[in-house]
Length: 395
Image (tube, rainbow, N blue to C red; front, side):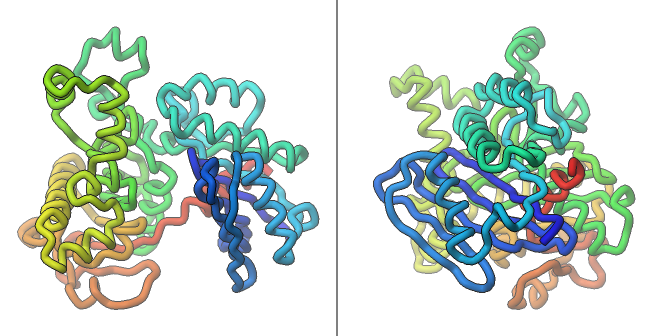
């Protein structure tokens, strides 16, 4: 084989990986190691039409990656013999330093480590993934692709927070944005689906998964996004609150006795869909809502309401919207969210075709009516392919 790039996404408690054939733009094999550091972990690996699974304790990220490499060999594809040409790493926070895919050197790793204060759950885990992968593949380029990179084009008016400018500068407080690899990939695919050059298309991208974010993209350049200094701001998410009045935090500190750790736990792990309904999986929220659960119904309504607010705001930011693209787990699979989020916007030239929206089948597709001035699209994201292509540029 040739043109193979191993993509590694090393998270706080899991590692996703995919071996990508860049020339064919497809995955050769993929897998995930979950619940790292817990008593019962799990490795799931897919290759050649077969899925293999292993359950047991996975002590740390080093063991997780070692097991993943071994699984390749055990299922018939030895990475040492396959000819891996590069390793691409998904890295969460590049701060103001890293705005483009970057060849990883010891100096780069040190800088990523210094930026860990901006992403304490993610950057340290990303570094472990780099170090272990470099031990296994010392002679190929390792390339970092940063979640924040796509949003370095945000204009100052969109990136700045209205706080004391000296404090903001000293502590790096600004809007960075996340899910950038997905937003870039989907906006480019949306333009291709419309048969137009990317620089001629203005789009709103809605990345709706357990983490959720929106972006406004003008001619291939991000001009606004919902996530901010951290991935906490913006849309309602699985366990994260999204937008909230900062005064709420002061109120809870003064009257509920909550400290910073308590508030961090509340906003990041006990809010969003889980805080409103008791469950964070959108499928479970939908099932409970359909069964008449009032809390689940409220969670769904808040989720959709916030989504509509961002669509409207980004329509104003762009002025002209050629496409609205839904992506990620909820965006690709929930016809009701797509329909409800855009319902009543016909006066703005946005019309969803109910039959096309609810038609079975995946893949890229148009779900708006022929009369709709703005195309409404479903575009499955492929961050691994985007990272692999970026890494391939360094080969």
